[in-house]
Length: 314
Image (cartoon, rainbow, N blue to C red; front, side, top):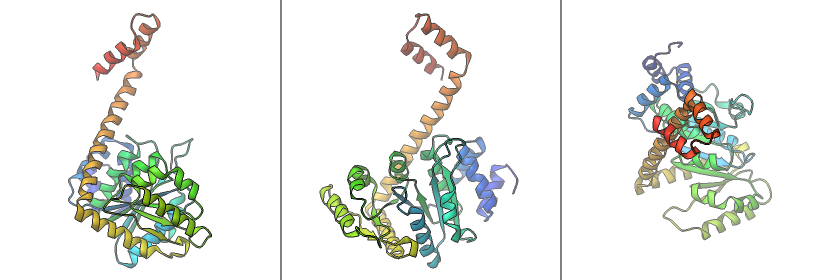
């Protein structure tokens, strides 16, 4: 469908038009007026998806594991969507589509939708683009959405905050890195997966993770530690079982509702900051800003006074 009308695009996408859905997500990512209108439509929709975040160090096998988890979902007759968060090209800002290449098994499956998203270039960044895209996919009828991130870091922690359940993927022999990332891992992990478990060092890695969990403040949910060989699909069934067990716990305990409320508050804050930042950038490109710089150079006014005056214009 080539229409640019948001209402027609939304209707076509909910009817199963994948080309329309792809155009919608692109509009949402760009932060355009049409994207904003489509986001409002998705927000008012009654469907709500279960979001599963997968994060871990580069090379941990997150894409392969995601592929295996989607296979399990399809065998169970359930549809799923995948948001693959790719590193942005330093030259174009575009996403490197390696994750989509690795998930070719599902490319022609109408019950699976895979989308790569670059880590920059959107209004408010991924912290705004991901929840809006997740809501759009939920409105299209996808009950489960996997959000796979690049690695462990600030961006990945932010993306994990957008998920109902977060799976942290590590490899055997990753003990030093586990300790280095202990605080972040403990904050975001609902399920631990030791992938590539056919390699030496699994017992030591499990021991390190168990020790970290023992030293952390105990709560009503202790993240299980599972072993997989995602390349062969081994352990994927158990990971799905653990993910949905956490989902059931979160729903029954009220954790899921609290997380959703916190996500909406953070999304609102980030979106407001992003909109203000755009207005400031526009202001800085105008004549008034140039005149203000001249006033500072001449020593007539200090930067803070001028900044307050310019902000007042907003």
